[in-house]
Image (spheres, rainbow, N blue to C red):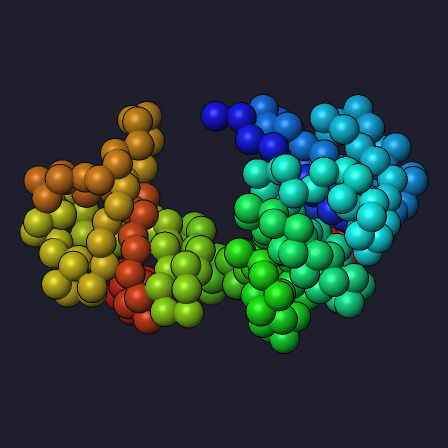
Length: 220
Ligand code: ADP
């Protein structure tokens, strides 16, 4: 279903969010106080306007509260990002996603009403680091402080040509296999216990981060 989004701040992060939402067919209002940035996104976003988001009257005039989702992608100006999040919340915006620069910023954004806080630099750094230290982990996403989902390539012969039942990753590692990616085959989602793991399959596993790391080490 088509949803309406307002993206405030067209830096690298906001611009990328805006472009991707438009590509997936969503309606996007792009807002920035910098006229050059707005001009760049005039033809990409559904609407693009020059406005200072710290100006409450301007935000109300844009009908911010009528959007399904507001993304606050103001980067360096932490004070502005907090103030705008607070104002969006007070206006009754349904869903607010805000970008944080650091942990303290994230905590304040949550306190003032952000429904979802993202740390793109930190998250991407973690993903790249996991990819660098492990030849098996292709991608990695932290779901919470304890849990992660990881894409792990199976090259270790001990794990190949055996069923999930036989491998018993749940008992042995506390991991659940949510999908299997196999060359030339459709993604196998929620595989059954009888599904066979083949050489060079990629398993999408979910579990405690420490268990994902333990599983990865054993395969090296
Ligand atoms: P990134 O790290 O994602 O590149 P930046 O800090 O470079 O983020 O960019 C943030 C964007 O937000 C800039 O284009 C800036 O003009 C815009 N911005 C900052 N404060 C406001 C504000 N009060 N109102 C509207 N836009 C703002």
